[in-house]
Length: 503
Image 1 (spheres, rainbow, N blue to C red):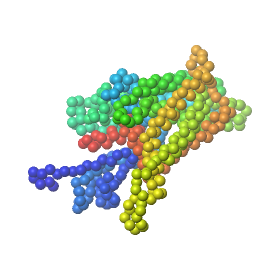
Image 2 (cartoon, helix red, strand yellow; image 1 turned 90 degrees about the vertical axis):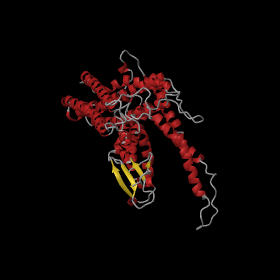
Image 3 (spheres, rainbow, N blue to C red; image 1 turned 180 degrees about the vertical axis):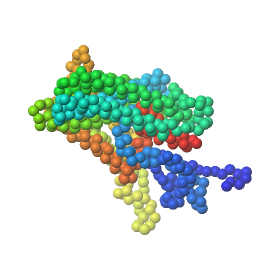
Image 4 (spheres, rainbow, N blue to C red; image 1 turned 135 degrees about the vertical axis):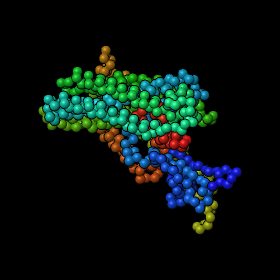
Protein backbone atom coordinates (compact mmCIF):
# COMPACT_ATOMS: atom_id res chain seq x y z
CA UNK A 1 0.00 0.00 0.00
CA UNK A 2 1.07 3.58 -0.53
CA UNK A 3 2.26 5.50 2.54
CA UNK A 4 0.13 8.27 4.00
CA UNK A 5 0.52 11.46 1.99
CA UNK A 6 1.88 9.61 -1.03
CA UNK A 7 0.17 8.51 -4.21
CA UNK A 8 0.68 5.05 -5.63
CA UNK A 9 1.46 5.25 -9.34
CA UNK A 10 0.34 2.44 -11.61
CA UNK A 11 1.31 1.99 -15.25
CA UNK A 12 -1.45 0.52 -17.40
CA UNK A 13 -0.49 -0.91 -20.78
CA UNK A 14 -2.94 -1.63 -23.62
CA UNK A 15 -1.85 -3.49 -26.75
CA UNK A 16 -2.71 -2.60 -30.32
CA UNK A 17 -4.13 -4.62 -33.22
CA UNK A 18 -2.86 -8.00 -34.32
CA UNK A 19 -3.96 -10.37 -31.58
CA UNK A 20 -3.24 -10.93 -27.92
CA UNK A 21 0.41 -10.47 -26.84
CA UNK A 22 -0.21 -12.22 -23.51
CA UNK A 23 2.48 -11.77 -20.88
CA UNK A 24 4.67 -9.96 -23.43
CA UNK A 25 2.43 -6.94 -22.82
CA UNK A 26 4.13 -6.64 -19.43
CA UNK A 27 7.60 -7.32 -20.79
CA UNK A 28 7.58 -10.89 -19.45
CA UNK A 29 8.64 -14.09 -21.16
CA UNK A 30 6.76 -16.61 -19.02
CA UNK A 31 3.05 -16.73 -18.24
CA UNK A 32 3.96 -17.82 -14.71
CA UNK A 33 5.42 -14.36 -14.02
CA UNK A 34 2.01 -12.72 -14.58
CA UNK A 35 -1.14 -12.89 -12.49
CA UNK A 36 -4.74 -12.19 -13.55
CA UNK A 37 -6.17 -9.37 -11.44
CA UNK A 38 -9.40 -8.94 -13.42
CA UNK A 39 -11.30 -10.77 -16.10
CA UNK A 40 -14.11 -9.98 -18.52
CA UNK A 41 -15.64 -11.73 -21.52
CA UNK A 42 -12.63 -12.19 -23.76
CA UNK A 43 -10.59 -9.61 -21.84
CA UNK A 44 -8.02 -9.96 -19.06
CA UNK A 45 -6.28 -7.55 -16.69
CA UNK A 46 -2.75 -8.77 -16.03
CA UNK A 47 -0.17 -7.70 -13.48
CA UNK A 48 3.34 -8.79 -12.57
CA UNK A 49 3.57 -11.18 -9.65
CA UNK A 50 4.51 -9.88 -6.23
CA UNK A 51 8.21 -9.84 -5.57
CA UNK A 52 9.12 -8.71 -9.09
CA UNK A 53 10.33 -5.24 -9.97
CA UNK A 54 7.71 -2.83 -11.27
CA UNK A 55 4.86 -4.67 -9.56
CA UNK A 56 2.65 -1.70 -10.36
CA UNK A 57 2.77 -2.41 -14.10
CA UNK A 58 -0.57 -3.79 -15.32
CA UNK A 59 -1.94 -4.64 -18.73
CA UNK A 60 -5.36 -4.78 -20.39
CA UNK A 61 -5.47 -7.67 -22.88
CA UNK A 62 -8.52 -7.58 -25.18
CA UNK A 63 -7.08 -9.73 -27.98
CA UNK A 64 -9.34 -12.71 -27.29
CA UNK A 65 -12.36 -10.63 -28.34
CA UNK A 66 -11.30 -11.03 -31.96
CA UNK A 67 -9.39 -14.30 -31.92
CA UNK A 68 -10.96 -16.71 -29.42
CA UNK A 69 -14.18 -17.56 -31.28
CA UNK A 70 -14.16 -21.05 -32.88
CA UNK A 71 -16.45 -19.65 -35.58
CA UNK A 72 -13.97 -16.95 -36.59
CA UNK A 73 -13.32 -18.53 -40.04
CA UNK A 74 -17.01 -18.05 -40.80
CA UNK A 75 -16.68 -14.31 -40.19
CA UNK A 76 -15.47 -14.07 -43.76
CA UNK A 77 -19.11 -14.60 -44.79
CA UNK A 78 -19.93 -11.31 -43.06
CA UNK A 79 -16.98 -9.50 -44.65
CA UNK A 80 -19.09 -7.65 -47.29
CA UNK A 81 -21.33 -6.21 -44.56
CA UNK A 82 -18.26 -5.27 -42.51
CA UNK A 83 -16.60 -3.51 -45.46
CA UNK A 84 -19.82 -1.64 -46.20
CA UNK A 85 -19.98 -0.52 -42.57
CA UNK A 86 -16.36 0.66 -42.70
CA UNK A 87 -17.14 2.59 -45.91
CA UNK A 88 -19.51 4.79 -43.94
CA UNK A 89 -16.70 5.78 -41.57
CA UNK A 90 -14.24 6.65 -44.35
CA UNK A 91 -15.64 10.09 -45.07
CA UNK A 92 -13.43 13.21 -44.88
CA UNK A 93 -12.83 14.86 -41.52
CA UNK A 94 -15.36 17.41 -40.32
CA UNK A 95 -12.71 20.13 -40.31
CA UNK A 96 -11.74 19.70 -43.97
CA UNK A 97 -15.08 18.92 -45.65
CA UNK A 98 -18.45 20.57 -45.90
CA UNK A 99 -21.22 19.08 -43.83
CA UNK A 100 -23.25 18.44 -47.00
CA UNK A 101 -20.47 16.27 -48.41
CA UNK A 102 -20.25 14.14 -45.27
CA UNK A 103 -24.05 13.82 -45.09
CA UNK A 104 -24.20 12.79 -48.76
CA UNK A 105 -21.53 10.11 -48.29
CA UNK A 106 -23.32 8.72 -45.25
CA UNK A 107 -26.69 8.72 -47.01
CA UNK A 108 -25.28 6.89 -50.05
CA UNK A 109 -23.58 4.28 -47.85
CA UNK A 110 -26.81 3.74 -45.90
CA UNK A 111 -28.69 3.18 -49.16
CA UNK A 112 -25.99 0.82 -50.44
CA UNK A 113 -26.19 -1.08 -47.16
CA UNK A 114 -29.91 -1.68 -47.61
CA UNK A 115 -29.34 -2.75 -51.23
CA UNK A 116 -26.62 -5.14 -50.07
CA UNK A 117 -29.15 -6.82 -47.78
CA UNK A 118 -31.61 -7.01 -50.67
CA UNK A 119 -29.02 -8.56 -53.00
CA UNK A 120 -28.11 -11.17 -50.36
CA UNK A 121 -31.81 -12.07 -50.17
CA UNK A 122 -32.11 -12.31 -53.96
CA UNK A 123 -28.94 -14.37 -54.36
CA UNK A 124 -30.08 -16.77 -51.63
CA UNK A 125 -33.48 -17.08 -53.30
CA UNK A 126 -31.87 -17.77 -56.68
CA UNK A 127 -30.00 -20.67 -55.10
CA UNK A 128 -32.64 -22.14 -52.80
CA UNK A 129 -35.91 -21.26 -54.57
CA UNK A 130 -35.11 -21.30 -58.29
CA UNK A 131 -32.16 -23.66 -58.80
CA UNK A 132 -32.78 -26.15 -55.99
CA UNK A 133 -36.43 -25.82 -54.95
CA UNK A 134 -37.86 -25.49 -58.47
CA UNK A 135 -35.51 -26.79 -61.15
CA UNK A 136 -33.55 -29.51 -59.36
CA UNK A 137 -36.57 -30.86 -57.43
CA UNK A 138 -38.62 -31.01 -60.62
CA UNK A 139 -35.87 -32.90 -62.46
CA UNK A 140 -35.31 -35.38 -59.63
CA UNK A 141 -38.84 -36.10 -58.43
CA UNK A 142 -41.18 -34.61 -61.02
CA UNK A 143 -42.99 -31.34 -61.66
CA UNK A 144 -45.69 -32.11 -59.07
CA UNK A 145 -43.11 -31.64 -56.30
CA UNK A 146 -41.79 -28.31 -57.59
CA UNK A 147 -44.46 -26.31 -55.73
CA UNK A 148 -43.39 -27.82 -52.44
CA UNK A 149 -39.76 -27.22 -53.40
CA UNK A 150 -40.44 -23.53 -54.06
CA UNK A 151 -42.28 -23.17 -50.75
CA UNK A 152 -39.45 -24.87 -48.87
CA UNK A 153 -36.85 -22.75 -50.68
CA UNK A 154 -38.73 -19.56 -49.81
CA UNK A 155 -38.91 -20.54 -46.14
CA UNK A 156 -35.20 -21.45 -46.17
CA UNK A 157 -34.32 -18.09 -47.74
CA UNK A 158 -36.30 -16.26 -45.09
CA UNK A 159 -34.62 -18.39 -42.43
CA UNK A 160 -31.16 -17.55 -43.79
CA UNK A 161 -31.83 -13.81 -43.66
CA UNK A 162 -33.43 -14.10 -40.23
CA UNK A 163 -30.28 -15.92 -39.10
CA UNK A 164 -28.25 -12.82 -40.02
CA UNK A 165 -30.74 -10.72 -38.03
CA UNK A 166 -30.48 -13.13 -35.09
CA UNK A 167 -26.67 -13.06 -35.16
CA UNK A 168 -26.71 -9.27 -35.19
CA UNK A 169 -29.19 -9.09 -32.34
CA UNK A 170 -27.40 -11.73 -30.24
CA UNK A 171 -24.00 -10.10 -30.62
CA UNK A 172 -25.58 -6.73 -29.87
CA UNK A 173 -26.67 -8.02 -26.47
CA UNK A 174 -23.09 -9.10 -25.77
CA UNK A 175 -21.32 -6.02 -27.13
CA UNK A 176 -23.38 -2.88 -27.91
CA UNK A 177 -25.58 -3.51 -24.87
CA UNK A 178 -22.58 -3.18 -22.58
CA UNK A 179 -23.66 -0.50 -20.07
CA UNK A 180 -21.35 2.55 -20.13
CA UNK A 181 -20.08 4.04 -16.91
CA UNK A 182 -22.55 6.53 -15.37
CA UNK A 183 -20.39 9.56 -16.16
CA UNK A 184 -20.62 8.89 -19.91
CA UNK A 185 -24.38 9.44 -20.17
CA UNK A 186 -24.88 11.56 -17.09
CA UNK A 187 -26.99 14.05 -19.05
CA UNK A 188 -29.24 11.40 -20.57
CA UNK A 189 -30.41 8.15 -19.01
CA UNK A 190 -31.25 6.69 -22.41
CA UNK A 191 -28.84 5.80 -25.16
CA UNK A 192 -28.37 8.84 -27.36
CA UNK A 193 -28.75 9.05 -31.12
CA UNK A 194 -25.70 9.64 -33.25
CA UNK A 195 -24.67 13.27 -33.34
CA UNK A 196 -24.09 14.97 -36.67
CA UNK A 197 -20.38 15.49 -36.04
CA UNK A 198 -19.85 12.91 -33.30
CA UNK A 199 -16.31 11.53 -33.49
CA UNK A 200 -13.95 9.32 -31.51
CA UNK A 201 -13.33 12.05 -28.96
CA UNK A 202 -16.93 11.71 -27.78
CA UNK A 203 -17.13 9.77 -24.46
CA UNK A 204 -20.37 8.15 -25.70
CA UNK A 205 -19.03 7.13 -29.13
CA UNK A 206 -19.50 3.47 -28.22
CA UNK A 207 -22.92 3.88 -26.58
CA UNK A 208 -25.57 3.68 -29.31
CA UNK A 209 -27.41 0.42 -28.73
CA UNK A 210 -30.78 1.76 -29.88
CA UNK A 211 -29.38 2.74 -33.27
CA UNK A 212 -28.25 -0.86 -33.79
CA UNK A 213 -31.80 -2.02 -32.96
CA UNK A 214 -33.18 0.43 -35.49
CA UNK A 215 -30.72 -0.73 -38.14
CA UNK A 216 -31.62 -4.37 -37.54
CA UNK A 217 -35.31 -3.60 -37.97
CA UNK A 218 -34.75 -1.64 -41.18
CA UNK A 219 -32.64 -4.35 -42.78
CA UNK A 220 -35.00 -7.12 -41.70
CA UNK A 221 -37.82 -5.15 -43.36
CA UNK A 222 -35.72 -4.76 -46.54
CA UNK A 223 -35.08 -8.51 -46.63
CA UNK A 224 -38.79 -9.15 -46.09
CA UNK A 225 -39.78 -6.88 -48.99
CA UNK A 226 -37.24 -8.61 -51.24
CA UNK A 227 -38.61 -12.00 -50.20
CA UNK A 228 -42.14 -10.86 -51.08
CA UNK A 229 -40.89 -9.85 -54.52
CA UNK A 230 -39.33 -13.32 -54.87
CA UNK A 231 -42.67 -14.96 -53.96
CA UNK A 232 -44.54 -12.87 -56.52
CA UNK A 233 -41.97 -13.60 -59.25
CA UNK A 234 -42.08 -17.31 -58.44
CA UNK A 235 -45.89 -17.39 -58.65
CA UNK A 236 -46.01 -15.59 -62.00
CA UNK A 237 -43.26 -17.72 -63.60
CA UNK A 238 -44.41 -21.05 -62.16
CA UNK A 239 -44.74 -23.71 -64.88
CA UNK A 240 -41.85 -22.50 -67.04
CA UNK A 241 -38.42 -24.20 -67.21
CA UNK A 242 -36.95 -21.54 -64.92
CA UNK A 243 -38.35 -19.01 -62.47
CA UNK A 244 -35.66 -16.49 -63.50
CA UNK A 245 -35.64 -14.81 -60.09
CA UNK A 246 -32.36 -13.25 -61.25
CA UNK A 247 -34.40 -10.82 -63.32
CA UNK A 248 -35.14 -9.01 -60.06
CA UNK A 249 -31.41 -8.58 -59.68
CA UNK A 250 -31.08 -6.50 -62.87
CA UNK A 251 -32.69 -3.24 -61.62
CA UNK A 252 -31.23 -3.71 -58.12
CA UNK A 253 -27.73 -4.25 -59.52
CA UNK A 254 -28.09 -1.26 -61.82
CA UNK A 255 -29.10 0.90 -58.86
CA UNK A 256 -26.09 -0.37 -56.92
CA UNK A 257 -23.69 0.58 -59.72
CA UNK A 258 -25.29 4.02 -60.01
CA UNK A 259 -25.00 4.71 -56.28
CA UNK A 260 -21.39 3.50 -56.25
CA UNK A 261 -20.52 5.95 -59.03
CA UNK A 262 -22.22 8.79 -57.13
CA UNK A 263 -20.31 7.77 -53.99
CA UNK A 264 -17.04 7.84 -55.94
CA UNK A 265 -17.68 11.43 -56.98
CA UNK A 266 -18.89 12.43 -53.51
CA UNK A 267 -15.79 11.00 -51.81
CA UNK A 268 -13.26 12.04 -54.47
CA UNK A 269 -11.90 14.93 -52.37
CA UNK A 270 -10.87 13.48 -49.04
CA UNK A 271 -8.88 16.07 -47.13
CA UNK A 272 -7.97 15.88 -43.48
CA UNK A 273 -4.63 14.22 -44.15
CA UNK A 274 -1.28 15.20 -42.65
CA UNK A 275 0.44 17.80 -44.89
CA UNK A 276 3.05 16.24 -47.14
CA UNK A 277 1.51 12.76 -47.10
CA UNK A 278 -0.43 10.92 -49.80
CA UNK A 279 -4.18 11.52 -49.85
CA UNK A 280 -6.21 8.46 -50.95
CA UNK A 281 -9.29 9.42 -52.90
CA UNK A 282 -12.82 7.96 -52.96
CA UNK A 283 -12.05 5.70 -50.01
CA UNK A 284 -15.71 5.16 -49.16
CA UNK A 285 -16.50 4.16 -52.73
CA UNK A 286 -13.57 1.73 -52.86
CA UNK A 287 -14.65 -0.09 -49.69
CA UNK A 288 -18.30 -0.20 -50.79
CA UNK A 289 -17.39 -1.42 -54.29
CA UNK A 290 -15.27 -4.25 -52.88
CA UNK A 291 -18.18 -5.23 -50.62
CA UNK A 292 -20.55 -5.44 -53.60
CA UNK A 293 -17.99 -7.24 -55.78
CA UNK A 294 -17.26 -9.82 -53.06
CA UNK A 295 -20.96 -10.54 -52.61
CA UNK A 296 -21.61 -10.97 -56.33
CA UNK A 297 -18.46 -12.98 -56.89
CA UNK A 298 -19.03 -15.46 -54.05
CA UNK A 299 -22.69 -16.02 -54.83
CA UNK A 300 -21.90 -16.35 -58.54
CA UNK A 301 -19.55 -19.19 -57.66
CA UNK A 302 -22.32 -20.96 -55.73
CA UNK A 303 -24.83 -20.43 -58.55
CA UNK A 304 -22.35 -21.92 -61.01
CA UNK A 305 -21.81 -24.99 -58.84
CA UNK A 306 -25.51 -25.64 -58.28
CA UNK A 307 -26.34 -24.74 -61.89
CA UNK A 308 -23.88 -27.31 -63.17
CA UNK A 309 -25.56 -29.93 -60.99
CA UNK A 310 -28.93 -29.01 -62.51
CA UNK A 311 -27.47 -29.39 -66.01
CA UNK A 312 -26.04 -32.78 -65.10
CA UNK A 313 -29.41 -34.01 -63.82
CA UNK A 314 -31.24 -32.68 -66.89
CA UNK A 315 -28.85 -34.29 -69.35
CA UNK A 316 -29.39 -37.60 -67.57
CA UNK A 317 -33.08 -37.41 -68.44
CA UNK A 318 -35.22 -36.69 -71.50
CA UNK A 319 -35.38 -32.91 -71.06
CA UNK A 320 -32.74 -30.43 -72.19
CA UNK A 321 -31.73 -27.10 -70.66
CA UNK A 322 -28.33 -25.45 -70.96
CA UNK A 323 -28.93 -22.31 -68.90
CA UNK A 324 -30.53 -22.95 -65.50
CA UNK A 325 -29.37 -19.54 -64.27
CA UNK A 326 -30.66 -16.11 -65.23
CA UNK A 327 -29.33 -12.59 -65.91
CA UNK A 328 -27.70 -12.46 -62.47
CA UNK A 329 -24.60 -13.92 -64.18
CA UNK A 330 -24.73 -11.61 -67.19
CA UNK A 331 -21.59 -9.71 -66.10
CA UNK A 332 -19.74 -12.64 -64.58
CA UNK A 333 -17.01 -12.64 -67.23
CA UNK A 334 -16.35 -8.95 -66.53
CA UNK A 335 -15.94 -9.62 -62.82
CA UNK A 336 -13.63 -12.55 -63.57
CA UNK A 337 -11.55 -10.45 -65.96
CA UNK A 338 -11.16 -7.66 -63.43
CA UNK A 339 -10.27 -10.14 -60.67
CA UNK A 340 -7.62 -11.89 -62.77
CA UNK A 341 -6.07 -8.64 -64.02
CA UNK A 342 -6.08 -7.30 -60.48
CA UNK A 343 -4.42 -10.48 -59.18
CA UNK A 344 -1.62 -10.15 -61.77
CA UNK A 345 -1.28 -6.43 -61.11
CA UNK A 346 -1.22 -7.08 -57.35
CA UNK A 347 1.51 -9.73 -57.69
CA UNK A 348 3.63 -7.33 -59.75
CA UNK A 349 2.92 -4.53 -57.27
CA UNK A 350 4.11 -6.62 -54.31
CA UNK A 351 7.13 -7.93 -56.25
CA UNK A 352 8.17 -4.39 -57.24
CA UNK A 353 8.01 -3.00 -53.72
CA UNK A 354 9.64 -6.07 -52.19
CA UNK A 355 12.64 -5.51 -54.47
CA UNK A 356 12.73 -1.76 -53.89
CA UNK A 357 13.34 -2.00 -50.13
CA UNK A 358 16.63 -0.59 -48.90
CA UNK A 359 18.69 -1.32 -45.80
CA UNK A 360 21.98 0.35 -46.74
CA UNK A 361 21.73 2.55 -43.67
CA UNK A 362 22.58 -0.43 -41.45
CA UNK A 363 26.27 -1.01 -40.67
CA UNK A 364 27.91 -4.15 -42.03
CA UNK A 365 29.04 -6.80 -39.56
CA UNK A 366 32.80 -6.86 -39.01
CA UNK A 367 32.99 -8.84 -35.76
CA UNK A 368 34.08 -12.49 -35.65
CA UNK A 369 31.92 -15.36 -34.44
CA UNK A 370 31.60 -15.20 -30.67
CA UNK A 371 32.26 -11.46 -30.50
CA UNK A 372 29.65 -8.80 -29.85
CA UNK A 373 27.69 -7.98 -32.99
CA UNK A 374 28.60 -4.64 -34.54
CA UNK A 375 26.39 -4.83 -37.66
CA UNK A 376 24.23 -7.04 -39.87
CA UNK A 377 25.17 -9.81 -42.27
CA UNK A 378 24.35 -9.56 -46.02
CA UNK A 379 21.55 -12.16 -45.86
CA UNK A 380 19.91 -10.43 -42.92
CA UNK A 381 20.29 -7.06 -44.65
CA UNK A 382 18.37 -8.42 -47.65
CA UNK A 383 15.64 -9.70 -45.36
CA UNK A 384 15.32 -6.30 -43.67
CA UNK A 385 15.25 -4.54 -47.05
CA UNK A 386 12.50 -6.86 -48.28
CA UNK A 387 10.47 -6.28 -45.10
CA UNK A 388 10.81 -2.52 -45.48
CA UNK A 389 9.72 -2.74 -49.11
CA UNK A 390 6.65 -4.80 -48.22
CA UNK A 391 5.81 -2.34 -45.45
CA UNK A 392 5.87 0.50 -47.98
CA UNK A 393 3.67 -1.57 -50.27
CA UNK A 394 1.18 -1.86 -47.42
CA UNK A 395 1.14 1.92 -47.04
CA UNK A 396 0.35 2.23 -50.76
CA UNK A 397 -2.23 -0.58 -50.88
CA UNK A 398 -4.99 1.98 -51.42
CA UNK A 399 -3.74 2.38 -55.01
CA UNK A 400 -4.16 -1.36 -55.58
CA UNK A 401 -7.66 -1.40 -54.13
CA UNK A 402 -8.65 1.75 -56.03
CA UNK A 403 -7.51 0.11 -59.27
CA UNK A 404 -9.79 -2.87 -58.63
CA UNK A 405 -12.80 -0.76 -57.66
CA UNK A 406 -12.40 1.65 -60.58
CA UNK A 407 -11.92 -1.17 -63.09
CA UNK A 408 -14.93 -3.03 -61.76
CA UNK A 409 -17.21 0.00 -62.03
CA UNK A 410 -15.98 1.19 -65.43
CA UNK A 411 -16.05 -2.22 -67.13
CA UNK A 412 -19.41 -3.09 -65.58
CA UNK A 413 -20.97 0.07 -66.98
CA UNK A 414 -19.44 -0.53 -70.43
CA UNK A 415 -20.45 -4.20 -70.56
CA UNK A 416 -23.99 -3.49 -69.32
CA UNK A 417 -24.39 -0.71 -71.89
CA UNK A 418 -23.25 -2.95 -74.74
CA UNK A 419 -25.27 -6.03 -73.73
CA UNK A 420 -28.45 -4.31 -72.56
CA UNK A 421 -31.64 -4.67 -74.60
CA UNK A 422 -33.74 -1.73 -73.32
CA UNK A 423 -37.48 -2.21 -73.03
CA UNK A 424 -40.34 -0.97 -70.88
CA UNK A 425 -39.42 -3.64 -68.28
CA UNK A 426 -35.92 -3.14 -66.83
CA UNK A 427 -35.90 -6.73 -65.53
CA UNK A 428 -35.61 -7.90 -69.15
CA UNK A 429 -32.69 -5.69 -70.15
CA UNK A 430 -30.01 -8.36 -69.61
CA UNK A 431 -30.23 -11.92 -70.90
CA UNK A 432 -28.84 -15.10 -69.29
CA UNK A 433 -25.33 -15.93 -70.57
CA UNK A 434 -24.44 -19.20 -72.31
CA UNK A 435 -22.80 -22.03 -70.38
CA UNK A 436 -20.39 -22.69 -73.26
CA UNK A 437 -18.58 -19.35 -72.94
CA UNK A 438 -14.89 -19.52 -72.09
CA UNK A 439 -15.42 -17.16 -69.17
CA UNK A 440 -17.88 -19.59 -67.62
CA UNK A 441 -15.54 -22.55 -68.00
CA UNK A 442 -12.84 -20.64 -66.16
CA UNK A 443 -15.19 -19.12 -63.59
CA UNK A 444 -16.73 -22.43 -62.52
CA UNK A 445 -13.29 -23.51 -61.26
CA UNK A 446 -11.66 -20.22 -60.23
CA UNK A 447 -14.46 -18.63 -58.22
CA UNK A 448 -15.36 -21.62 -55.99
CA UNK A 449 -11.66 -22.38 -55.45
CA UNK A 450 -11.07 -18.78 -54.41
CA UNK A 451 -13.87 -18.86 -51.83
CA UNK A 452 -12.64 -22.15 -50.36
CA UNK A 453 -9.04 -20.89 -50.31
CA UNK A 454 -10.04 -17.71 -48.48
CA UNK A 455 -11.80 -19.69 -45.74
CA UNK A 456 -8.82 -22.07 -45.53
CA UNK A 457 -6.39 -19.15 -45.11
CA UNK A 458 -8.44 -17.70 -42.26
CA UNK A 459 -8.61 -21.14 -40.66
CA UNK A 460 -4.88 -21.63 -41.13
CA UNK A 461 -4.20 -18.38 -39.31
CA UNK A 462 -5.29 -20.06 -36.05
CA UNK A 463 -2.08 -22.12 -36.03
CA UNK A 464 0.37 -19.83 -37.87
CA UNK A 465 1.69 -16.94 -35.82
CA UNK A 466 2.78 -14.71 -38.69
CA UNK A 467 -0.40 -15.31 -40.71
CA UNK A 468 -2.54 -14.87 -37.60
CA UNK A 469 -0.95 -11.51 -36.90
CA UNK A 470 -1.42 -10.30 -40.48
CA UNK A 471 -5.06 -11.36 -40.66
CA UNK A 472 -5.59 -10.26 -37.07
CA UNK A 473 -4.51 -6.73 -37.91
CA UNK A 474 -7.01 -6.58 -40.80
CA UNK A 475 -9.85 -7.98 -38.66
CA UNK A 476 -9.07 -5.66 -35.75
CA UNK A 477 -9.09 -2.61 -38.01
CA UNK A 478 -12.30 -3.61 -39.81
CA UNK A 479 -14.16 -4.52 -36.61
CA UNK A 480 -13.11 -1.44 -34.66
CA UNK A 481 -15.98 0.73 -35.85
CA UNK A 482 -19.55 0.68 -34.46
CA UNK A 483 -22.20 -0.91 -36.69
CA UNK A 484 -23.77 2.38 -37.66
CA UNK A 485 -24.02 1.67 -41.40
CA UNK A 486 -24.78 -2.05 -41.44
CA UNK A 487 -26.01 -4.10 -38.46
CA UNK A 488 -25.00 -7.43 -40.07
CA UNK A 489 -21.29 -6.56 -39.89
CA UNK A 490 -18.96 -8.52 -37.59
CA UNK A 491 -19.57 -7.30 -34.05
CA UNK A 492 -17.09 -4.57 -33.03
CA UNK A 493 -14.85 -5.57 -30.14
CA UNK A 494 -14.60 -1.91 -29.10
CA UNK A 495 -18.25 -1.91 -28.03
CA UNK A 496 -17.20 -4.15 -25.15
CA UNK A 497 -13.56 -3.28 -24.63
CA UNK A 498 -13.98 0.52 -24.42
CA UNK A 499 -16.86 0.65 -21.88
CA UNK A 500 -15.17 -2.10 -19.88
CA UNK A 501 -11.91 -0.17 -19.84
CA UNK A 502 -13.76 3.05 -18.96
CA UNK A 503 -15.17 1.29 -15.91
